[in-house]
Image 1 (cartoon, rainbow, N blue to C red):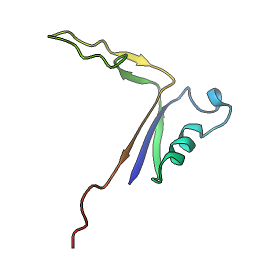
Image 2: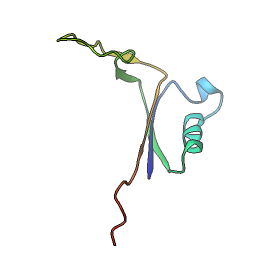
Image 3: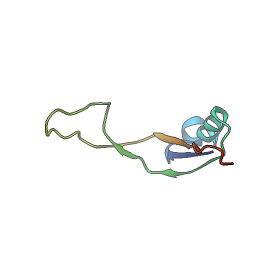
Image 4: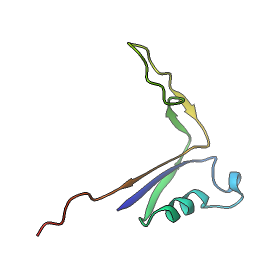
Amino acid sequence: LLSFLVSCGGRGEGLFGESGTDSKAFADANDAPVVGFFANGELGPVGARIPSGDARIPTHLHGFTATCGVLLDTGGDEE
């Protein structure tokens, strides 16, 4: 079990007034150790739109975002 967190460099003490806000909140939400880093934004679409036909979803640079994930061992106990 491992948690992974990538926060925008604009987050943290400058935004929340104290350091470690994102990592503390994520660590409180699960029992896994948290690893990660700061980045300068996130590339991705706006909203959950599914295009019809050959239409393309425009990609944007987002700021002040945090992306997280949890890796789980789903393998059964081997005896």
